[in-house]
Every structure is written in structure tokens, then in C-alpha cells.
Image (tube, rainbow, N blue to C red):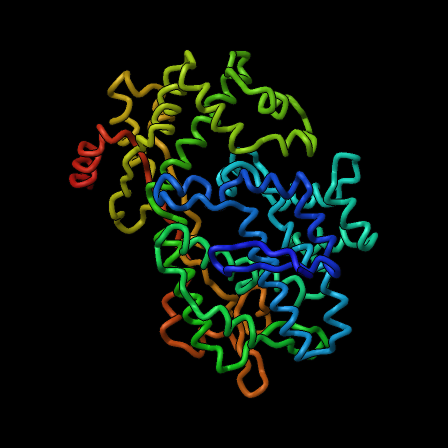
Length: 441
């Protein structure tokens, strides 16, 4: 066979040409990429949706599959030589854009204090003997690691905008895969949209400055609307699910507690890889890559026997799926903010009444959701500042126009995003917390 075939639940077959793209197969075989098998795509969502056991590696293969199709579409509608020059950088970026993810994907970014894109760039640019990804890329083209790193960096504008936006924009290959893949594995059923039309109708439009940008024809307008609603429903039903978020906050609380014990000179019963990572002023790439989900889960298992009562209690609750109960703040009157201190202090007082829940910070967990997550599509309002990066645009009479300006049904999704706060506390206290909120003035 001329192609290496991967069986995939979403696309059935994903093929990579053994002759033309043998270097992609080498990238797939690197330890850095294979590590993604051990990183859940949806963090701890499997505690909410039992089927959500898919990993970052499968998603990355899906993105490279979509990028192949997008490039094939562009070749027939644009200068083939121009598109071919972008082929290797885009396929490489599609495959390894997530190589820097930590345990449980986005969940561990607050714990580690750094975005996964930063680690992805470090891994791609690393020239140490143990860094296989960089060596494979350089054999293709000496400049390829730098170009791929640029395309991953959301603040870098050195590469052509249409290339950046195929990977990171309001409608990109990454989102086209994960929305449908996450919908499939969770069984949520709300991530469906006409991805084939979106993938095979976009165009490269040249603006007044000669910059090529991605736009869609007017005939794709309803497919875009369907995509935006699917994205909204997936955030509300899956990504921000109250049960999932509760376990995320529980894991973050355990991490903070153990780190405080460690920094105070106590014995946090740390796994070797975690102890070395915390001890390093600037952790190395290999120290970072050694932090896998199996490592963290074994660490949590160790904490179930820890002498610190709160740490061991939360570890047991996490592993046994005995999560906290969620409670929303009361509806605040005019002049009060959503992070109203009196309400939080009242909840803290409720938790503090029992010595069983000590310290209270481990048993009252606060979840602050940024507005952009409650409203995942919020385009730039000023037309002269719109681009595919911050708005999805369609061609009307040859001019790019932001799609929600043409579809009234999308207007509610493009209002100013509003943040949200939720609290989690032991289920044994939930009835009292509800009563407290009911009588709140």
C-alpha cells in the first residue's frame, strides 16, 4: 500500500502517503508525540461522560487529516505551487500542535502556571539529543521548526495570515475535528454540523494590502451558523459541565495543598518526576514530558494514604468519583458583583462550622468562568479590524462581511460575554447551602 492507514472512529480511514510524507510517519513515531496517547483529550470529562476516553494523539491525527483535505481543496482553486510551499509547515503544525499538553490537557495549565502552547514551542525548537521532533523537522527543511513554532504561537504574525488561521482562528481545522470528535465520544450529540461544506468551500481572498485571508462564500452561511451553534452547545453541555468542572477544581486543590506542604518543608509523598519538576527553577523539557496522566493518577493514589487529612480525603473522593455539589451564587441586586464577598464568606462560614472540613479552602472550591467560555463566538465588532482570527466572514458582493451581521439567529451569541462564578462544597452541606441562598438578601 502506498499509504499508511489509521483506523479512526470519526473518519473511518486516515491515510498518510508513505513516499511523499514519510517524515510525518517519523513524527508520529517520536516519543514526544506518542506521549499524547497518555493525555486525555477532554481532561477528566470521563468522570461525567464514561465514553470520553479519547486522547490527544487521535485528535492530532484527525487535524492532520482535515488539513490534508483543506490543502487538496486549495490546490484546485489557487496557485498550486504557492499552496505546495505551505504544505509541509501546515501538515507538521496540524500533527504536533498539541505536543506540549500536560496531564489532563487544559486542566493542568493553572497547576503548572503555563500554557501548553509555550511547551509545544519549546519541544519543537529543542535541539538536544533527546528531542526527536526537532530532528525530524530539520531533515525536511532547516527552517521548518521555526515556521511551525510561529504558526503555533497565537501572538506571532511572521507567517502568512491564511496559514495561521487554518490552525488557529474562529473556524479552523483544530476546532472542526475536536467539536465532532468530542461529541462522538461523549455521546452528547450536539456537535454536529456540515463540516464537509466548510472544508470544501472556503476561499483565499486578497485584501487591499495584498494579504490573503480565508473567507467563505454566501452559500456556506447556514453551515457556519450550524457550526457556531454546535460550538455553543458543546461548551454548555460538555466543556463547562458542572460535574467535570467540580472534579477539575478538586484536582487543582489537591495540587495546591501538596505544593504548600512541600514548600513548607513537609513530606508531600511526591513521585520522583513531580518532585524534580517542582525542585527545578526552570524545568527541562524532559522533566516536563515525564509528567503524564499515569504519573499524576499514581500520585493521587499515594495521597490517599497521606497524613494530611484534607489531602488524603480529596484524593479518595477523586478516585472514587465522590465529587462536591455545585451551587450558584444568589441573584445579586444592583450594585453587587458576581464575586460578591459576603456570599462567599457565608459559604466559608458554613464549611468552617465542622472540623471535618479543615482547612475550608480545600472544601469550598470556587470556579470562575471567563465570559469567552460562556459565549465561545464573540467577533470583533469593528469591520476594519475584523479578520478570520477574530471573526468568521463570508463574501457578500465580493466583500468580506462578518457572518452574524447576516443572520439574526446568531445575534444572541455575539453580545458582550459575561463571566460566571460557581462554588463547590461537600454534598453533605448542599441542603444547608441551598437554604442559605434561598434566604439570602
